[in-house]
Image (cartoon, rainbow, N blue to C red):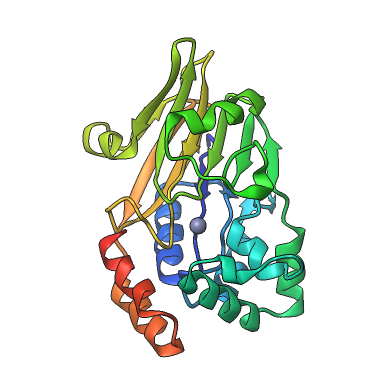
Length: 258
Ligand code: ZN
C-alpha cells in the first residue's frame, strides 16, 4: 500500500480532539505519523496526549516530533520569564509543569527543533531561528524561511491557521485551506520545481474561525496534500477545563475556533 503520512500538531493537550483525529487517520488508511509540536498547553490532558504521540509510528519507529513553544516553556525554566506571557498562557504553562513527571519533562526537553526526513522538513514555526518561534502572518515573513528550506516541502504549525505557502519564480503565493476544503475536497498536488510550506493547523485549539480539529495527510508518491477537518466533542473538553480550574477563556474559545 502506498504510504499516507498524517502530519498533526498543536494538539495542546486536547485528548478528545486527538482521539477523533487518530480514528479518522485509521479510516483514511494512514501508515505513518509526524508531529509538528505543541503537544501540551491550553487543555487539560497533557499526560494522555504525550502518551499517545509517543506511541505513533513512522516506518515502524517512533514518529518524528519537533519542539513547540509550549513544549519548550513547560520543560525549560532557566532564563524564561513567564511574566512576559499573556496571563492565560502563563497560568496554563505553570499548571502543566506541575502535572509533568520527570520522565515527561526529560522527553519534552529532548525534542529537536527541526527534522529533515525523506524530502520533508518539519519545524514548529520557521527555519530561521526555529528556537525563537516567530509567527508567519504574511507572505513577507517567510522569505528567510524559504531560503533555508532545502526540501521541496516543509510542514509547520504554530499559528493554528492551516494553509499552503508556495514559492515559485514570481514570488510567494498563499493557498487557503478554506478554499481547498470547499472547492477541492481539501486536496492540493505539489508541483515539481516549487517549494511549499504547509501549515497543518491545530488539532486542539483551531484559530481560523472553524472550530473543527485540523490535520493533513501527505501522500509522497502522488505529492498530494489533503487537509482534513473533524468535528469533535468540544463540550467534553470544556467540562474538563472547568473541572481542573484552567481559565474560562480557554474553554470558550474552543467553541468559536478563535
Ligand atoms: Zn500552538
